[in-house]
Image (cartoon, rainbow, N blue to C red; front, side):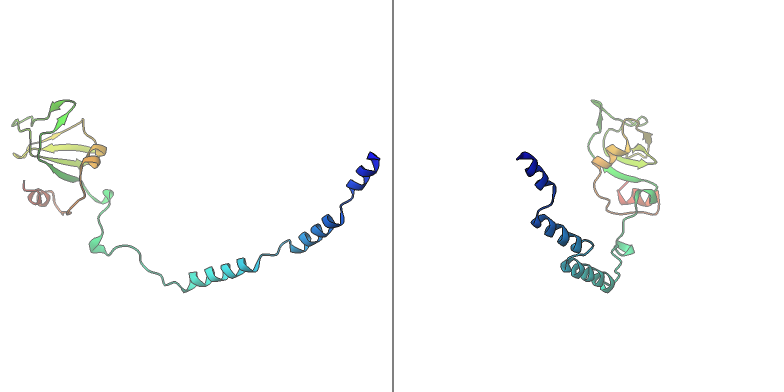
Length: 148
């Protein structure tokens, strides 16, 4: 009895045979909705006008590699590693200009003395600086803009 069941199971049933025939006929065909969507996408791609999506030149901000450096005012005392930073020449400890240039950070006091600060890096500058409000052609123009 089990032998007959196994032999009968080895042949595909009528329903399986019809399923395989229909599957073979549909193979390689795509649904009409897919063809319609492809045609719409192609039509939209060719019909869309090419628009410059960049800002006008007068509204663009220069990238970091186009700038020689950046600077920001720092009115309050600067505390690094629990120690207040003072100017090595005049002893001033507040109202700094912090300059970031070539992966170095420099401090400039109100008297115009500059000192390299090795405890600060560009990442610190980026975290603590706000957005740039202006760009200047020369270092002196920037100093005038910041009131130094």
